[in-house]
Image 1 (cartoon, rainbow over the protein chains, first blue to last red):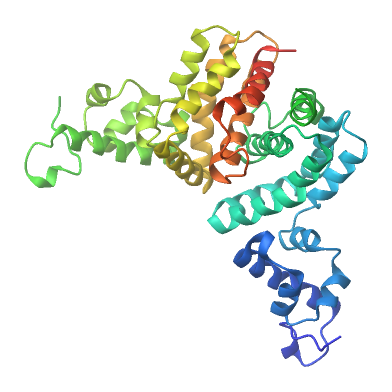
Image 2 (tube, rainbow over the protein chains, first blue to last red):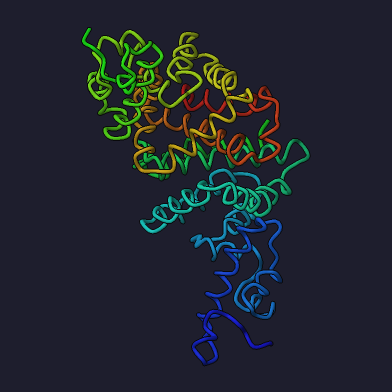
Length: 200
Length: 200
């Protein structure tokens, strides 16, 4: 492994792991902003951070993991999708929502999701970045599990309902949705996702 | 009617109608930003514009009309809601969507809706303003037409799907939703709104 050249080098000692990881995340934010999610590579992020690519793989399991850490997502959305898909298509609408609520519906999760929405919507670059991430790591994974009948359209419409729910419940905080029990919301919205993903 | 004191007064002649209307809209934007939609009044807007309140009523049919003009909305959302409700609850999901698509799905409408979303989401003030407007002029009108079973929750969930659709189709422009024929989207999303507003 080559000598890392991160922001810590000036301190005149070998940077500790946290410094290296932080340097990678700083570089990742720049690379994602510059090249989008699809165009950024782990190799390019390593180069920008001045570290060996193997070090990126040491800290992160893949590009989605680097992205989730760089954006300070409380979870990798792909993980929620994979977990929901693992149970098959039956009941997947409710499982997806329960997975998301488990992460969002904490005080920290609420603050974080509002910050992320504000940040990505404030620029064309941010919108492109989150769009490419959602398409590649969320929609395409769901669509791949569906039948041949409009899978991408169905996945994107399911996402539209989830994103709208985020806007109403967490960003605009419109009552009674903002304070409703998650299970009450799931009883309405779960069947919507179920129909988009699996119904006629 | 008292002598109007708008920005045109310095020109040393009686301001033309367009100038008065513009002065009212400038004042309205400030009043809505300062007091929110619910707190702003036509009287306060007239005072801020330096015109008689009757002049505001001369140019605008009501607060929602002033707001739609100040935000450069291509239509008053309340009008779309009223038109959809006028047909009764049967088929209201599709009618609401068709009404919105008729306004959004023009080149000018697409540009304008993205500008509005960016503008209102960029500040707490903007979010509060649009939230109060949507609650008062859209959600409450729909909820008033529904039965006693969670009408506000149902109206807000319907709005969440519509707002998510705006985000996916117009703001993030995620395919295939961005380019899909409106009728194809209506075939999926119409039944969702129908169930939220009228179903079990």
